[in-house]
Image (tube, rainbow, N blue to C red; front, side, top):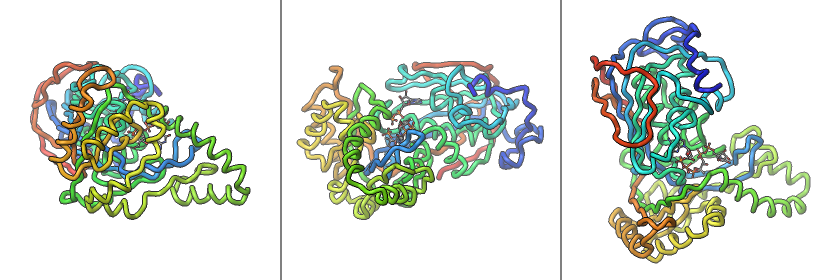
Length: 434
Ligand SMILES: C[C@@](CO)(OP(=O)(O)O)[C@H](O)COP(=O)(O)OP(=O)(O)OC[C@H]1O[C@@H](n2ccc(N)nc2=O)[C@H](O)[C@@H]1O
Ligand SMILES: Nc1ncnc2c1ncn2[C@@H]1O[C@H](COP(=O)(O)OP(=O)(O)O)[C@@H](O)[C@H]1O
């Protein structure tokens, strides 16, 4: 179903009480209570780095079994959502495939305005493929209603960089609209919605330090926040994004050769056991014929929990690093320069092309960032190499109501406006943080 179809204003679905669960209230025909035009929510969501990424075989849906340790860092996406009207737009809740319900193609729904600011945001398509739009439509489809809303996002996490900036945008949108629309979904419900938008979105909601199996979309928190020991990294962005499917594809290409010879050697019995082990290890039912990933060693989990950067340095592993570097060999220079500058360990962040350099302190990370940018000077396009220092774990996406009519236009960036504005009104205050 396209976003156009999601409008569904003719569908007679009921309204929502401010504190009731959506399931309980759909079909009652009541207005949304406790909301006013001009209500505004500010939200944030973290970027991430994978301290461990074991990649297994490919599932029938094209996704890979993963075993990964995520660290949420304080390089964060920020945004706001402002209520433009209190008249609900009823959304058809006909079931369909997750991607279709989220609106894969087409224009924005008529109740949504979205704009971006920040580095690289002008290159983002603000249409129904954008993760902010998909998240808003997914929530509205789940609830059965939407309220006219403007969402403004300030992009700080580099785009297509292996740091899950788009997933963070989806996570902050879910959090922000859950607050603004008084929807009352809990973290589990938001995570279930997020999983349908992208494998990294659940972690954007959970945040902190987390260990995930399956498709990387079932993160389990490893440390209590706040108060968890911090890890510090310098990140070196690339002006050229790297496609996540391309990196997984390159992983498959190389592994198919290895696995073909393994398969020649393995007996039928061993192969059947391997796929049973994959299903058992990952909890994914359709893991048949997909090899289980290598699992993060206990010592790595312990070092990450303890914030022991020195111990962690030798344990960090990323099965997507070799394929990412085969696609972008020039990134080896950044890794070498970071090691030369004294980083404890430099590695590809997720599917790349960002290079992460683990350091012993924030100051050390600043020094490494400065030394690498001085040594390399330019990025692949001849611009000054962009480095940023970040620390974590930090919490997952959160949203805070900030009062009526406090919305301000984000200057610059791409923008699409498809609904009428409203006048500021009174506001209730709801804070939420996980
Ligand atoms: C590799 C990781 C590591 O955390 O992130 P990045 O480093 O790109 O941020 C994730 O697995 C990416 O998560 P995300 O970017 O949300 O992926 P999605 O949008 O769901 O999927 C994009 C594509 O990546 C591939 N994909 C993703 C996840 C997975 N477990 N197996 C895959 O093969 C599929 O080709 C899929 O079509
Ligand atoms: N709001 C968004 N921000 C960034 N990328 C987005 C967004 N919406 C859709 N995308 C698309 O998602 C892809 C992955 O983006 P991103 O999350 O930044 O990188 P990665 O998956 O490497 O961590 C990009 O190709 C981009 O075009």
